[in-house]
Length: 367
Image (cartoon, rainbow, N blue to C red; front, side, top):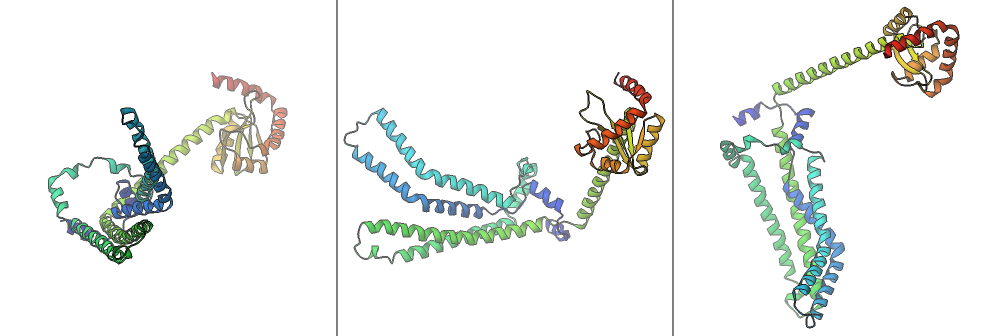
């Protein structure tokens, strides 16, 4: 049945399908990559800190053996010595452990695209099904993973065998050498073993990640019905959002129309734009845009203004700038202070009776 379902999956996954898969924690994961980065980071840190760490440990050992005959073994002295030993070891191994932690986080981030997968933490009850559990144990993926693990063992074993065979040819095993040469030999041996180990892990990690990537791409393939269903859902969501935007726009327009009767003036284009302004001394720092509209809605604003006797001033450049730069409910831009002040001055001189009514209208609205 699973193979039949896979045969039906002929379509490439959509962006939404890929995003949902990442949210579920379904992305290509190669454990070997984490091991490779951790070992590589540990080797890199040791290359810089091994000499100083070894010197610190050696000095501590010398101090311990130097004071051994004169130091009494008591509870307090043992605690002090153990504390010093822990600090020395921590300073030596701390950078290595920190580098391994950072490498592990980096490996996880590289494989997941540095994205969180909250759904991956959820309990999956289907994983507790014994039948599906046996199916996973004897599945093709498990056999492939076992093959990769066997390849890992063989590659690492061969790399270490070749390194050991080359090291056995060193003069250390066939002729007398100086004591200092032992340290040089150990350093060369460690570099040889670790370099071969990193090379083997790199090849295995590349093979494992390539397989996981291929397997994931096969698993995320979609059937034509799934693609059609997702497209229908996306279109439905788009229609719903469009309807929500239309409803929000209507509510805003309704609020703007209701605010027009309390405006000081309507600045018009005269036919394309209309902007309603309000300014109350002691309340507003600058004139406020109550409403604005273009074309049909501008005509509705002007009609309501005429119905309530709101003064209308025609000023084409100011109307365009107010419509383009002004925001409903906010003060006008500072660049328009002078132009709007001149318009309000004209209105206040020529429509004194209207502002007497407007004051009463605003008081009634506030009550």
